Amino acid sequence: MKNRAFTVGGFLDTVASAIAVSNAVRENRMPRASDLVRLGINPGQFSGIKTYRN
Image 1: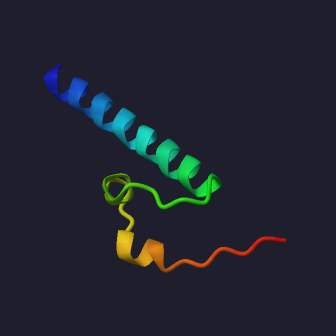
Image 2: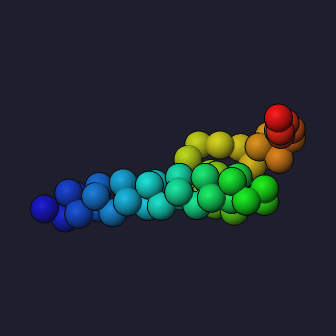
C-alpha cells in the first residue's frame, strides 16, 4: 500500500508541475526550474525557446 501512496503522490506532483509550467507560460514568465525538471524538460533549453504572437 505504501508504494501505491507514493505513486499517487508522484502523479499529483507531476500534474501540479504541469499546471505551474502552463500558468507561467501563459503569463509570459519563466517557470521554476524544479517544475521543468520534474516534467523532463531541460531548463536551459526551455529558456532558449522564442515565443511568437499573432
